[in-house]
Image (tube, rainbow, N blue to C red; front, side, top):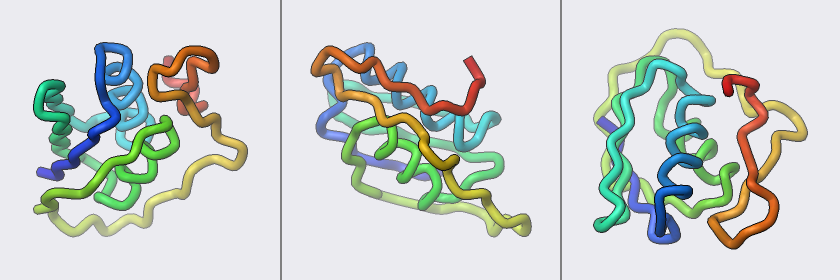
Length: 103
């Protein structure tokens, strides 16, 4: 389980944006969000903590890694796509998105 604190996650839109970003990095990941505590817990299938942290950052948020207990993954992880869109943190406007095409 990998846990992040995301203090700038403040509403349902933020929860959806972060969940979509995590699924872009690891489509099989299980994501649990506690909005009141600003916590995101992820049970990854294919991605490791640095890739998940980067995905949340690319969605426009500032995650802090709290805990990471993950099995070693043999396959190397691809980096983010060049030109990947960066979303907003509910400040209105850009709407964001990860650019992975999964939606």
